Amino acid sequence: MKKYTFLTSLLCILAIQYVSAQQVLPGITVKDFNGKIVVSWQNAYNVPVTNISIQRSYDSTKNFSTIGSVLNPQNLENGFADDNPPYKKMYYRVFISFEGGSYLFSATARPVKDPPPPKKEIVKIPNDTIVDKPTDTIATVTNPVTNPVTNIPRFPWEVSTITDSIAKLPRKEVITYPSQRIFTGRENNLVIHLHDAAIKKYSVKFYDEMDSLLFELTKLKEEYLIVEKVNFVHSGWFHFELFENGKLIEKNKFFIGKDGRNSSGELNRRGNNR
Image 1 (spheres, rainbow, N blue to C red):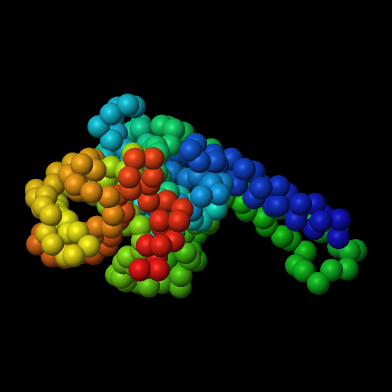
Image 2 (image 1 turned 180 degrees about the vertical axis):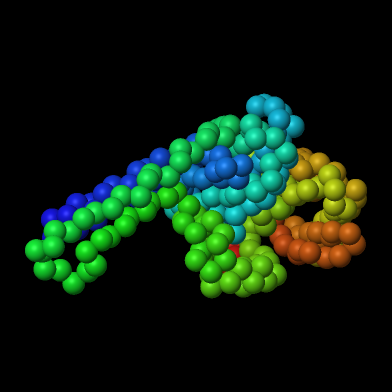
């Protein structure tokens, strides 16, 4: 029986070591699992996180491009797998946006080879020990766990399903306020953050509270764009319509405050009640 107590303790220690090895945002952990690059982290922010996008680059300081984002940015433990990186030593970072419009970038890191999984340990139970379990127990601990049906590696933040067909079903996007694409940033300027803007045809129309068209931006090719607040003439509530290839994909609103004020706190609460 003491043998089983030792084995259970060993498994717990290895699991704790895996979780504690992950960096806490804005730090990230980047590992190479036989060519599959996994970017992972722990989230300890008290402010609600609205979006986390993963970016990579051949250079450590510029030319980063977004390769994906996580579905649940609020998760305490999260990550993203880059299955087919063009280069095994790319630089990775994540873009983090918060409720209220503020945002930041994580530290930059390159993949580190993950050590091979520990060898199987066979725990022998003496023949004279009376237990309700088999006399030979094999314990195997690996970083990713494998779905026994699909044989596809899974990580703690990934949802295990009986078949992958469920995971591949299209998901309907839930639009929330503030928008994760267009929101008020520092100094009440408007931030436009569009994934894959270089290869997609984005355009956006801006309206005032009376639904009068103010102006339109077309052929948006930059992933990040700052629109100065002076373009909106006055403070107050505005709304927008975002199009991709001529198709409306989002309608939302934002608040342009006066100097010294922004759209967080009380203004956000007011906006949710409108």
